[in-house]
Every structure is written in C-alpha cells, then in structure tokens.
Image 1 (cartoon, one colour):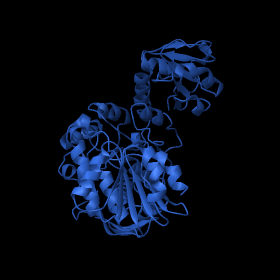
Image 2 (cartoon, helix red, strand yellow):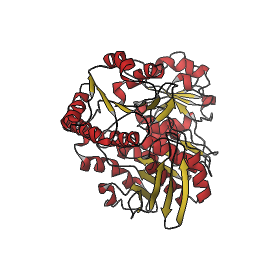
Image 3 (cartoon, one colour):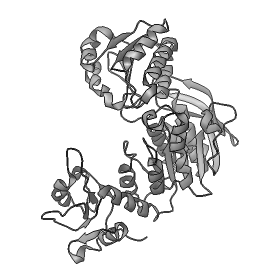
Image 4 (cartoon, one colour):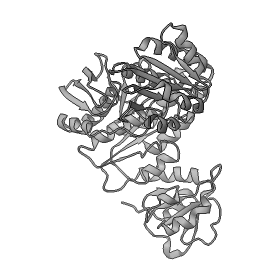
Length: 453
C-alpha cells in the first residue's frame, strides 16, 4: 500500500512542504488535533479555534512524536516538517478522502436523527465478534472528526464503522464524499436541527444525500418503522429493520428484563434466533437490529451476532444506568430531541419503582420548538411515569403541556442551579430517575448532586 508521507500530503493538498528534504519520505500514521493526544508518527493538525489556536501547540506536538504538522501559517522554531495550506480543515478533509481510497475494507456509515452513536457502538460490537474494527471515537462525527478517524485506519483493521452527523444542508455530501460507505445504516428521520432543515422532508433530503456517494453494489439498511424511510428509494439495494412485520430484520418477543438488559428474537428470511443486549431501554432493539443486519451482510453467523450484542457497552451520557446506593440513575443527558425523549420516557415507564423524569430544553427545533415541547409534556402525562421535573427556558412548555393533559403534578425550574438546590427534597430513596436534555443545557452538572444523594 502507498505510504502517507509529508511529501505525499503536500501533493494531495496542493500545500507547500517546509522542512528538511530528508524528512519528506517519513511515514505518517494517524492524526490528531490536540497535542495531548499525539502519538509517535502522527500528523498534527493545527486548527484555529475561537479561544485556542493549534499552531501555538505545534512545539508540544513535535515533542510528543508528531511526524509532521499541517498548518495555515509558518511555524516558529519548528522541530520537524510541516505542510503549509490555506485551510487546515479543508486540507484534512482532502487527506481523509484520499486515504479512504487507499483501502478496500468494508466501511459501515451511520446516519440519521436519533441513536447514531448507540447504533455505531452496537454495530462495532457485533462486527467485532469477527473482525478487527475501527470505529468513530466518542462523537467525532463531523467534518473534522471523520477524516481524523479514517486516518487511524491501518492494515490491522478489517472493517470500519463511521458515524456521520450533520446539522445543515450540504454537510452530508461533504462527509459522504470522504467516507464512501459500503453499507449505510439510517436510524430514523426525526425532529432534529429543524432550525436548519425546516421539516421532516428536509431532514430526509439532507441525510439521504449519503446514498448518492455509494457504489451501485452498496447497501442501505434503513428503519422500516419510519414512514419516510420505509417508502424511500436510495437507488441501491435496501434492507429494513424494525418491529413491523414486513421488515427484513424484525424484533419479536421484546422483553426489557431490567435496567441491565433487553432480550428479543431476531427474525429474518434466514430464520429466527434469540439475543440479549446488556443495556437499558427497549428502544435499543432498533440499534441491535441494524447491527445484526450489517453483520449478516458481512458474513457473521447467528452465534457471532449474539456474542457481539452481549459485548455491547453504552457510552457516556447515553442511557447509562447505575445504582448510586440511594437511587437508580439513568444518565441520558448527552442530547435530546422529541423522538429520543419519547423513547426514553417509554422505557422509563416500564421499570419498577417510583419513576421520575428530569427533562430540559430540546434545542434546534426552530419555529416548532414551543409546540414540540408542549407535546412532550402531554406525552409525559400519558406515559405512565410517576413524576416530571422540567428545567430550562423552553422546558416551561413541557411543564405547561403536562398540566394541560391533566396528568402528573409537574415541577418547573428556570435554571439548573435552582433545580440542583431542590433535588434533595424532590428525589427520595429507591426512586428511578431519568435525566435528559440537549447537550448544551449542561445537565451533566446535575450528576454529582444526584450521585451523592
């Protein structure tokens, strides 16, 4: 396989190589944008941020073993070679696209409005039962994170699972041109980023652009319970997953055993087999079905799929469940939109004990924000939970919606500081507490208090 070197990087990007001629052919492996994450041989990408300029940390990157830097301005006292480009962000995307073309390994892309990271982790776990898998770390699913992830791909890996998150029109085209997935899982077309996409048809149009960048023999795996996706023609072969009877991969006999596991039968045209995922939430069956469909397509057996699901572990802030010794705490505060909040409330209502939901603002809903927050309040009132606590400027509409539905007797707090002060009185021993809001609401700040009650 062709090596990635400082010389090749300058050729790919049209940048200017600066440094010792003897270093032009040094092997570059992997990439990082944070000098604290640099490993020997890495390309260090100098990104200008709102508060921090990566160029100022190039010296530390060289000391950590960076083989080369990618920069927009001359680096003072550079301790190694660098490539000077007009935009490091555009350059790293160009490098990622080129590097992806060097590999013929199967790449699974994950797209959609809800559950992308959970599906990414589930698919990685399933494929990991047979292959050495590279996956998107944490939530690096944007135009910087995706090429950085792909540059970690090497000869050891046998497959890759890459999450693709978009929040504006045109962004999926830019990501898909880099990733070029062989299989793309579309989780759901939901109410997210409506401030940019307008409505569900706009969400579908933005996210389905990925299929235009896939080869004719590629595969789309889509949520067949989603009305828009069920009828959508991606222009390539399509499999569906869901609970409905006409899906290619469907779940039957779903049982949320406890806060620790959900079990069900996977049924497809190849038969039926029983699986168990060690995680909270009946809604996780959708991610498991999508992962099973990808696994079957890539040749995994029922036993391998079953073993892969058993190895699944939830990631931070996404339906993490733990017993604090005082309460059962469901930390699902990484992000929120109407679809994911309704799914979380439905799962919460199935658990034993006094079930309390702490809900905050769902951001990015544009002109539909007030209506959708009210509808969540109405849904919460009918969901079967025991208590609702709302916090945030838009969460007042959740509170009002719940009251209008003549359901629960909810609580409302304008700020997390006010809510934090009230938690010891609102939460009692053995309660089951769900915490969910959009990431920018910073509901993670509630966790220390809830954990120490």
